[in-house]
Length: 327
Image (cartoon, rainbow, N blue to C red):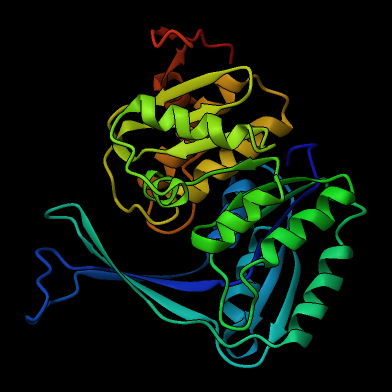
């Protein structure tokens, strides 16, 4: 286990991810399942799971349905996570992911989560406060279920920053837009979420860079934009890097963005320069793509993937220069 500690994730809307493999899936037809797998998840739970795979101890907080909490509790125990989830009445939602390896497509069927009461949120606030003494990094991930105000992340970011914490936000829609106004340390939208955020299409690399720089100007220290097969952009006030991944055999895209967040936070906690943060974040996402369920391959595989990631320095002039590897 690494000597590094002090990471907590907050997941307002966890889910049990039921992945079913159906080659040649066709809507409106009889489809036969080749294999299925159920994993406790939700974005923050996935981030914590990947961080555990990278050798970190991590705490998990959020709102968890009491009726089917056992599958999450088993995961937390297996990966030595500190369980700070607030239990609420009802069942945690189930997300069905239909994986068609024939066309490498995924169809998501996401159920709603249980309704949340103001009392639940008060208990969650107390649970997060209990983590402040021993955790310096907080990752706030995912959507807000019914009953949670859309500005909840924004208020939580303000409270965590006031306590001197580093906050990473990975959400979408209004929770992301309002959360950005509170200036978290970092955000990680994908390209579609970034386009929704800025209200305009981003047809090329220059447009994505410009959008990221506008967000940096609002007080965010680092903007990570996942670009799918094209890699990811890592932008700070001083640097703007593009990480280009090698081709891998994709088994599932479930949790790849969460693995990128985990790899990025892990690299920052290890004090790595931005180029190596980009390599580890991208290698972690690639590792997740090669697995079924929210888990990473062994460390030597991640190291090998890091060595295959090309990092370009996108200079202000628009010319791209390769960034040397230091790991």
